[in-house]
Image (cartoon, rainbow, N blue to C red; front, side):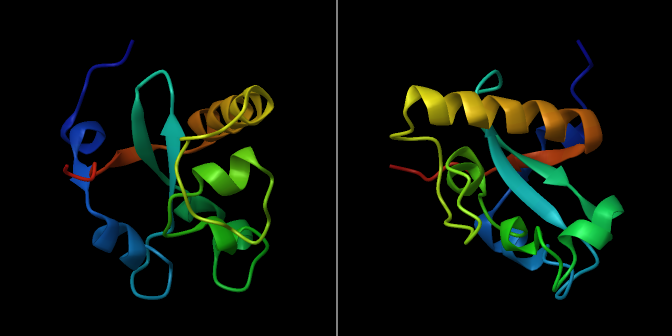
Length: 115
């Protein structure tokens, strides 16, 4: 297993995530809950601006928590976490996690809401 680094332990706020839309900054980030880490990871998809850039097909997932949208295959980009997902949706989420983990670096974790 890889060693934890400053980048992979960085806590990113929702406000910082919102800025990573390719417009307000050059970053294109997608948040996705990773069950094995029990955290919502922020993936840097900037290398694929042809897919995730403004006006492109996957831009709907950028600068937000795309867990719910990807797990339910909602191409409108409904934002939300993994709470309430059924077994089929959790399996779909797992498939997306594998794809993202193989292709994109994690730049940090989404700040958890405090109680």
